[in-house]
Image (cartoon, rainbow, N blue to C red; front, side, top):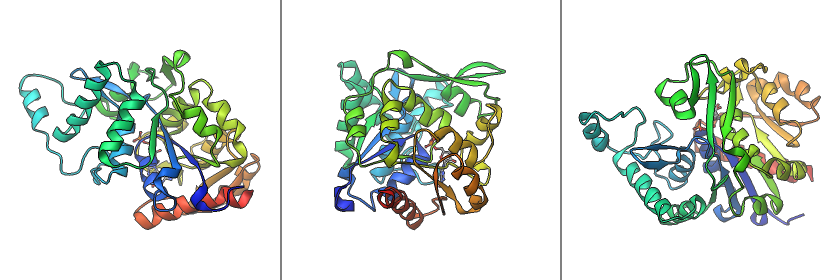
Length: 318
Ligand code: GDP
């Protein structure tokens, strides 16, 4: 066992906003250099020929202290002049990209055109923005989350942003997943981690695509004894986004229990919110250790406390 918090190597499986908030707390509990975040790229999309990685950017901007606090994504105080002009030319502007945000996508696209893998591009962007956490895309190979709905098969961003998550989701698929290899460093980071945390992210469109990349779910199962997940569902509802509706339409219980049931063979510990305390006994019967605490990350103290709780859950279990 590692001696202290300062030696721990921590891996976080991360989507966008929920994960970014959690990581903001975690960097106040341990040094950023101790953390590797493995980030979903199933939401990636191209706009105006530019490659956009929404979850990587949300986590990167948040950890750089640059994120727009009102939306949880995009850059603080950004302007929209480029898209206003594009709209005058008749381009679609439903996916909002601010002027300074566009610089990130331009830079990423320029480097991609030179043949650089997404993992190396991400490393360089993070270095430029002073992000100390190591952010790894789940894969350098393209994976695209698509949702089967009564309106047809929709790419994730069309479902989520253009159509405002209004369609019932009948199933979720990850195009390209069979060929996708974990990005360099992903499996090694998981193998050598003292603690793996599944962030409070959407189980279907943030965490599941990461787990579906060859070898990642196996790697997590091997570390089950030191793995913990945090429920993104509080009091039967998602804090934001369509996780609750997806649980319902995919035939699962719309509660922290429903999420725990998905993760039962992957983690040892499951953290639920205090408003869900009465679910603890049922979740324990899934053979999970349950921790009840405040999981709603309303401000920095709450983010820090949740991170501390997740870290200690595994330390105490050893
Ligand atoms: P997205 O790709 O930006 O939608 O990001 P994520 O999948 O990481 O985040 C969405 C999930 O995070 C939703 O299911 C939310 O319920 C969850 N979430 C957001 N904020 C909080 C919070 O403060 N506490 C908890 N427990 N979950 C949260």
